[in-house]
Length: 144
Image 1 (cartoon, helix red, strand yellow):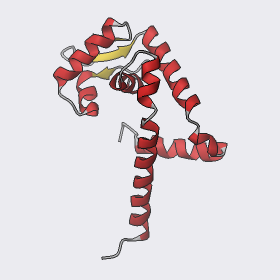
Image 2 (image 1 turned 180 degrees about the vertical axis):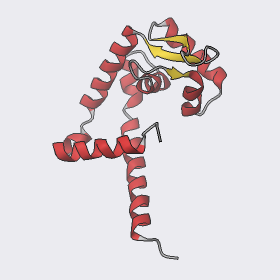
Image 3 (image 1 turned 120 degrees about the vertical axis):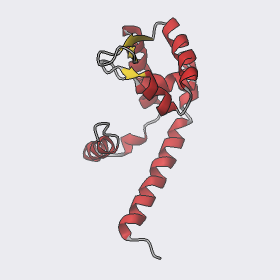
């Protein structure tokens, strides 16, 4: 059975997204090492947005690992003063992670370093960059 044009385009878009992701991912270990961070610690800093606490269970799910592994990771990052573990305001049995001011500054530095090192998005016009941003926001909309 032949693939429809929409299915073929969706398949090609997925392939290109994965190719782009893995090409950029290659820069992560080198960037993290400059800040004395492991690749997974860099990923955690990207995932926790300033002012938006992240439940530890969601972090474990996102990293596809057991909650016990996340505990050790969080312990190490907490000891460096990058994140803090707090009870959720919605359910005190749930622990959430929040960036400390030091963690937020390091996250900002890491993001600037990552985007300054590899400039594939600079190939796009400002209009194309805005369109890409809107598309990616729609794809990762956490309220959906």
